[in-house]
Structure formats: structure tokens, C-alpha cells
Image 1: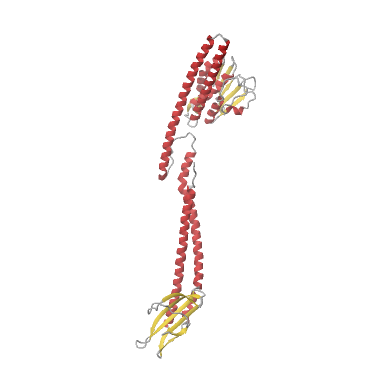
Image 2: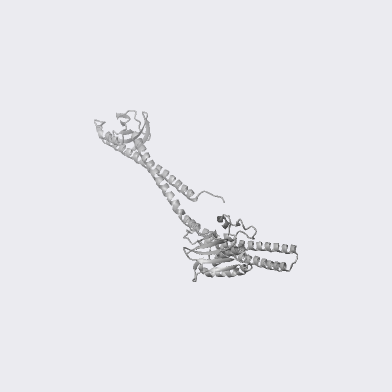
Amino acid sequence: MKFHASIRRRLFFQLAGVAALLSLTFFFVVRGVAERAAEGTQDQVLAASAIAMADSLRNEGGGVTLDLPYSSLSMLGTVGQDRVFYRVAVSGQTLTGYDDLPVPTALPQPGEPVFETLMFRGDEIRSVTLLRPMGSEANRAQAFVTVAQTREGLETISRRITTLATGIGAGFFVLATALSLWAAGSALAPINRLTGAVTRRGPKDLRPVTAETPRELLPLVEALNSFMGRLRASLLRTEDFIAEAAHRVRTPLATVRAQAEVTHLKLRKPEHKQAIREMIRAIDESARSAGQMLDHAMVTFRADSLLREELDLNAVVEETCDRLDPTADLKDIVIHRDLPDHAVSFQGDRILLQAAVMNILDNAIKYSPADSDITVSVVEGAETSIAVTDEGRGFADTDLSRLVSRYKRGANVGDVVGSGLGLTIAADVAQVHGGRLSISSNKEGPGACVSLLLPR
């Protein structure tokens, strides 16, 4: 399976990238607007100063005089600690101010200030020039009023604005990034809920997914439900096949064994009888192995989809004992039932419980000597116990914990046909019903006790 980048990570980086782009745009827009506003303020102050000077020009004795209003220059100090330059020129002659202060290349129209940014004495300055006509029509003179100011204060204001815009932009980016992380998690929350709904299921729970799903995920959920429906049908067919296979395998083997026993009785030569006995033993081993392997497969398939129903454990035990009584009679073994005189109710799967009890009881018959007793008891307590006690060879020094593993057998049963699956099947059935399997050797005398412990 190939793994690609996380959707959450991809969505987060995309949203964070958009936030970074917006923050950068915000920074340039705020700085540009603020700088234009500061420059506009300086231009307005320069224009006001120039107008104040122009309004102070007078015609006297055929010439132009100026009573310089110092307030017109003092107002420029409000913009910043910059140097101020001015020049008043009439007909090209400087009336007052700096002779070398340049006039604009484009001559202004009367009453319309002209603004320029230029270099003067090594400094960048911002200047405004006004044209004020003086005198009568016959004796007309052109007065130019130029006021300029360095831009250090404006640059200081610009730096402050830049710092402020940077701080605001960074704060906006951090906030937008946090919101992007939240948005990515929120957008993927339905997927996480759907994942949780599927993860909490057992391995055989193939019911359709009914969790609330966003519209965009409906095709995926529908495809998943369709797949699980096909898989469920396939598993049901497999379970039916296992049940049919169990019947098809056991019946012919039983027939062959019966014919082999009849042949064994008719033979007279010892070597022929020995060969038939070996055949019967092989048939028994094959039948038992095939049957228990099919039983184990059936338990595995039904384990996570138990068909729970109200059962009487006494009836389950009675039915199982009745089925195995003929097998026990062949060895003159008597199966005793020690059951309560009232029904013992339990919610469980009848087929699985019968398979568990049958395998435990079949083991007891197989490993018990002829002409012995087996007791099957049902005891109610903190747990409901179905115990099978025999008078067989027990478990000797075998590690009892390993006997529930597949194909593991006791150290003292090598001469008896077996597959090592009987106790495994019983333990699996107990586990899926929330119980456990207890195995012990009898403390007094030979034999063993295997108990299926089920929760009350």
C-alpha cells in the first residue's frame, strides 16, 4: 500500500499559504495607504505654508514687498524635525529665501500648487510652488512662492508605519494559521468519526455503515457498504460449505471404517488383521483431524457474529451426551449427568456450545480406559461451569497453558489418535462467550477435569 501526504497536513499548508499571501498583501496595502496619507498630510501643510506666504505679498511703490509671516514656517514643524527652505521670487529675482532653491520645471497655473520631490544640498526634499500674479494689467509681475522641507520626518513616520503594519500582519498570520489548523481538523472530523465507527467493529462485523456522513463521502461509504455486503455473502457461502464439507467428509469415512471393521472380523491371518487395524487407525485419525479442523473453521467463522439465543445448558449437555453415548459404550464407559433440577439459562450460540462440550467429552472418552466413568456436571456459582471429569491418564507433567494452542497435545498421549484441536475449539468458544476454559488433573486418583466456565 502506498502512503501519500496527510490530507490534514496538505489542507493546513494550503490554508496557511493563503493566510501568508493575505498577510503579505495586507502589509503592503497598509504601508502604502499609510505612507500616501502621511505624504498627503505633508503636502497639505506645505501648501498651507506657501499660501500663507503668497497672501502676505503686497504691491507698494511700484514694487512687491513681503511681510514674512513666521507662522507659515512654524506650522511645518508639526510634521517632524525637518529643515525648511523657502524662496519668494518676483520676475526671476529672489525677493527672500534661498537663491538656489529650484523652481519646478513645469510652471504652475495661478492658484494651482505644483509638488515635486527632488534633491537639494544633498538631501531629498518635498517642495510646493505657487504662482501669484502681482500688480495691474499694465505692470503685471509674476511672483513664485516655493516652500520645501526635508523628508526625514516622513521617513521616520514611514518606518513606524512599517513596524506597525509588520506587527499587525504577523499577528494576522498567526491567527489565520491557528484558524487554518482548526479548519483542517474540523473539515476532517467527519472522516475521523467514520473511521472510528468502522474501527470499533469486530473483524466479522459486516453490517452497513450508517454513521452520519458528509455528502462528499457518500460514494465512498456506498462503495464500502457494497463491498461488505459482497464479503458477507461470500462468508455465508463459506460457512455453508464448511458445514456441508464436514458432513461429506465424516460420512464416507465412517462408512469405510465400518467396512474395515467387518473385514477385520472375517480375517484369520494375523498379518492381515494387523494391516486392517492400521487402516482403521488411519481412518480414525483422518476422520478426527478433518472433523476437528472443520469444527475449528466453523467456530472461527461464527465467533464474531454469534447467534445468541436463550438456552438451557442442561438441555445442551443432555443432547451432547446422548450423541456420544454410543461411542462411550464401545469402551464400556458410562457417562453420568450431574445436572441441576431446574433449567440453567444462558444467552449463547447453541452450535458453538455443543461443539465445545462435544470436543471436551470426546477427549475424555478417547483418553479414558475401558470400563470407567465420566461425569458431566453443570454447576451455578459466580460462573456457570460445565465440567467433564474422567478417570483417564490425565495430563502428567504437561504445561497446561499450552494445551489450548492449536495442534498441541499432552506429553503422555502419543499412542492415541488425535489432532490437538479439541481443547483449542473449547477455549475459543469460551472466549467468544466472555468465559474461559479451566484444565486440571484430578488431585485424588487418575483422570482430569476440563471445565467450560461461562459468565452468569
